Length: 339
Image (cartoon, rainbow, N blue to C red; front, side):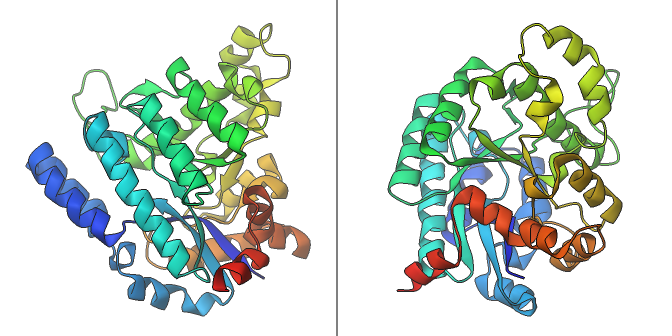
């Protein structure tokens, strides 16, 4: 079966070199050490294409959608600097897609979300000039929730352009686990903080009415949409429902089921099955987080899907058909690019 990895990360080489030089001056040495050890140099395949090819050769008809790895662009610097880095990242990702159409079916553009007007300009440029399939948006923007009115024009523009949103969690160790503490312990900000972030952002989009105002908005939620599938009944009948039952014309779960979730759950088959059970096989996309997950993350994700209760047609949908339809990509796109 053709496999399209809908959430594969990359740090293009020129972008990363310039980013590291900038961050040496812009952030603390402790923060920079985290990024260098935990992301930038976590795995050679993040920047080295030859290493990436070696990792994926065994999977046959396998291609990726490129999504920029952290940090979020808006955390790199003030609006002018963020916009510059977004352009650099998008230009380089577009170049990689053009050079390697058999490996990369497209990319999600990066946006300087600390400046709405700059983000709108970059969406238009990345989609119109570079062919971006949509944009990556993080679950909060420097602590501001996505249902804030200033982000609504960005959602509206992506909806009009018929392009998708890749929703990625963001949170760090400075977000404490408890009010009496000053930092997160045991890496909980990542292990369970990111799934919470994803669920909170999606929930705010639903309860705030954002998904009602933008009925054609396509949102791809990373890591199986976080906690949403597991706690869907609580979301359907809890305070959020009671608070919005008179303002939303549909039950909350109808909006939640409009989201798309990927399968980047790192070898937790039971969790992937839960995602499939909630969203349905037609709203689940093969996504691995490669190469930022554990070793052999692509193999682990494939094993998860193979172990789930799916028909042949449903497996084909999850592996590639769903994302090809959602993003209007397919074998014919690869053939055109190769010509």
